[in-house]
Length: 237
Image (cartoon, rainbow, N blue to C red):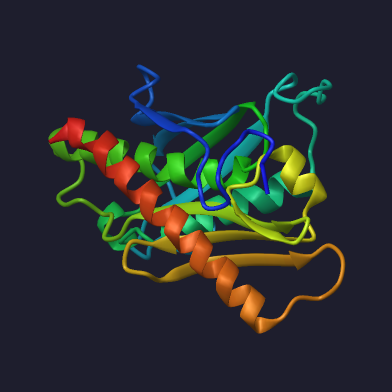
């Protein structure tokens, strides 16, 4: 089936990650995934949530927002949405899954993910770019002697897969996502572990065999994203 942007069914949109996009953040990265663009920046705060005070353990959390004209029509600025809150919790959970929080010593790292332009896959792009920004921040703080070791012990990346007009597709753009009969967002580590699977039947229910095939397709795409992350981070070595 020809796709809207002429990709094959198992092909990612063009991906580019620009490291150190912001000068003042502890770490940052701009990820471009087709027409989707998300700016990820990391800030260090010398505090932890109340439930971690005195524990000796740090924290990684995320905030997610869409700029007013990141979409075809204007989105009001600073509008509190359940969707945004759900996405930022997903980003935070995903990044914590790769982080040794004890090494952070009661410091909080806030990963801000601002969608500059949205054409589907903003949450998966934020996770993939957020990992690179967090690595960048930890690398810089290690050089400054703030952190004794690299707290990240795994890589994290995410992508979407779905069924559109009966065809299994990798990395859905907005038009494909809008038409999808089944839609998955998948987060994985580079050790072939699943961090999160969000799967929904928009129409009729799907079988276990279908779910397995979609997860396999997602893993193919995520493996490619790991390679792009590694290439981007090579500039730090």
